[in-house]
Structures are given as C-alpha cells and as structure tokens.
Image 1 (tube, rainbow, N blue to C red):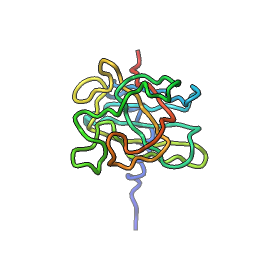
Image 2: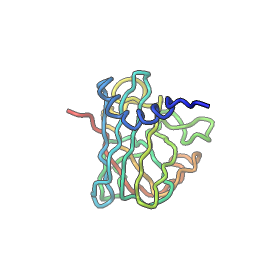
Image 3: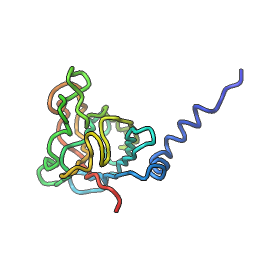
Image 4: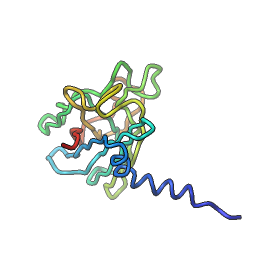
Length: 177
C-alpha cells in the first residue's frame, strides 16, 4: 500500500506558519513572555490567516512541568510586582468562563498547555473568537491585552478563571512598528 506524504507536509507547514501567515496577511502581533522576576521566557505570536482565523503560536522555556491555564487577559500590562494582576481579568466579552459553561467560553479562553519535564512549551491554536485589531474582540483595543500562563490547569468551568491559580508568566501583546 502506497502512502501519501501530504498529511506530513501539512504538519510541517504549520510549524513554519507564524512567519508565513504574517507575511501573507500582513497582520500580526507578538507577546514577549516574562516570569515573575522579569526573566524572558519566550514568545507568543498572533497572525491573522486568510480564512479569518487567528493563529496563536507559543514557544516558551523555563516553565514548571505539567498542565497550566493559558488565557488572554483584558489589559495590556504585565507589572511583575503584584503577580501580574495589572493584566486584569480574562478577556471575557459577554461570555462566562469555560467551554463547559452553557454561556461560555470567554474569547480569551484557550485549552490548557502542557509543559514537559525540560520546561519547554511549544503549542499552537486557532480561534475565531479574537482578532488583532479589527472585528469582534480585538486584542489591540484602547488598553491592549496580555497573555497569561497560570500555575494550575484550568477546570474549564469555574467563573471567572477556572481555578487556574497564580499568574506565573505574562506578556503584553504588541504589534510591530
């Protein structure tokens, strides 16, 4: 039986996608992620796709192993003193938290991310609930938005934050100038 390599080519293309999509549509944004001590932990890249979906690509290191809540927060601020509380609450829109809620999820809710024993996190998502600067739920509104990684996994239902615990990493979402 002869097998096609097409599915593998699609997967490989997705790993290169943040840069290819950003060039193709020209609309992108990046969050430089920092830990509680201000240390650089990596990047989260956002790129609008030709289909209208927002592609989110995460590359981080130095995180504790295990599952963690991963959310977009409503304010583009990541002050280290105060445990990143300056990022505000989840980017909620008019929704409740979690995919298990009848009135959910928040536009800024994403699946839990899983960090390996080596502290490495590399994952990507697609969403139609957010945009970069135009449309519904823009990341680049008047006060901006931030990406937050939480200490614990999200339970996907407890409002407002899924009992995901302390904020252990934060990055302000910014567009290139």
